[in-house]
Amino acid sequence: MKSALITGITGQDGAYLANFLLEKDYNVYGIYRRLSTPNFWRLQNLEVFDKINLIPADLIDGSSMVEAVKISEPDEIYHLAAQSFVGASFEQPIGTGEITGLGTARILEAIRQIDPEMKFYQASTSELYGNGHSSSLSENSPFQPSSPYSAAKLYGYWLTKIYREGYNFFACNGILFNHESPLRGLEFVTRKISNAVAKISFGMEKELNLGNMDAKRDWGYAPEYVKSMWLMLQQKEPDDYVIATNESHTIREFVEKAFDVAGLDWQDYVKVDRRFKRPIDVNYLQGDYSKSKQKLGWEPKIKFNKLVEIMVKEDLSRWEKWQNGQIFPWDAPNYSNEANILTRALKA
Ligand code: NAP
Ligand code: F7E
Image 1 (tube, rainbow, N blue to C red):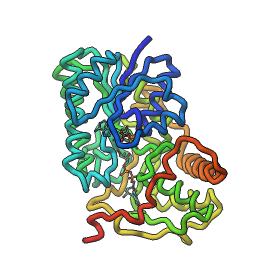
Image 2: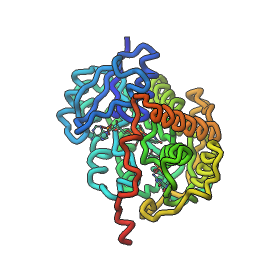
Image 3: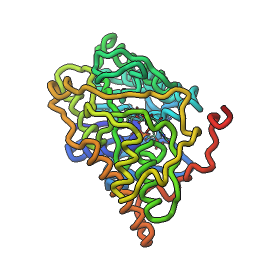
């Protein structure tokens, strides 16, 4: 039986990947960090919480990462943990560098010292490309990071290549474009929209405040994307791959479709709020996944319209169940509606 260690197992991708690897009969380990309130709702939602092994560790603390690798002795390591919210990286650039950038160095060093035969997956990102592009982006397109998050991820991307070339690691960068699901964090725009549409349609909220609605993103479906991570580590040689749908849509299009699914007109509810605008935003991202199709046999099945539908219908169903008194693992009832969030954009 193969074993895998997932950093970030409590996040969106970590939960789906744990589920996927359990179905492949892996012994799954995951690290989780100490929080004042436990955050296992995604693992419980997918009913995998009782089937995995959890190891307490934090990317900030290198010795805990060494312990996690020693305890799990995995064949494969999927490094998904990060401060992953681009907006927050402008507010916490140093913490983002520590976790998202140096955290990758800590785990790579743990592997180098313990067993360099362990295969390594690095969660790289389309944010690496930044601005200045107008056509589909491939593994060969230039990077121009536009946020502290993407600068930290660029460090992780290069370190992964350096350990591959310098120490002969089986280390791969998955350059994943945005991927979403009902398990997406509520601060990201897609889930913020699907959750707000559901609350508005039940009369629990009156409006939705958003930032830049003109940005374009290439949105895919997270459960399909985690399969590509596994495929990368099953190849003969380590390499880097773009995972995307090769379609892009504006935030406005997402909003329009999401309200439409609930039978509402978005223009009656959506307001632009500068608190949610970033000092720099990436305006256009669309990914060319032909290398992944050719080498991994990977292709996305769920595209934009279906994705929006899945997310809005799931949030409608959750709020309905919740109003009927049903108890189940999810995040929205405990999330602030953002009305009392202050950011420095308000002072600008
Ligand atoms: P996510 O839902 O935000 O999950 C992030 C995970 O990292 C959580 O499990 C979180 O733990 C953990 N984490 C954060 N700080 C940590 C620390 N100091 N020590 C240990 N764990 C820590 O992110 P995701 O959407 O699943 O994305 C997975 C990875 O792919 C991330 O690296 C992200 O940057 C990257 N990525 C995501 C996308 C996308 O569209 N989703 C696209 C490209 C790349 P807590 O539960 O304790 O907070
Ligand atoms: O923003 C705009 C915002 O926060 C998407 C992460 O998983 O994908 C994600 O990063 C767009 C941006 O995701 C709001 O300005 C408008 O243009 O959902 P997001 P992201 O920044 O693309 C990449 C690939 C990752 O690697 C990251 O880890 O939507 N936008 N109004 C807004 N965004 C948010 N969050 N909230 C708004 O109110």
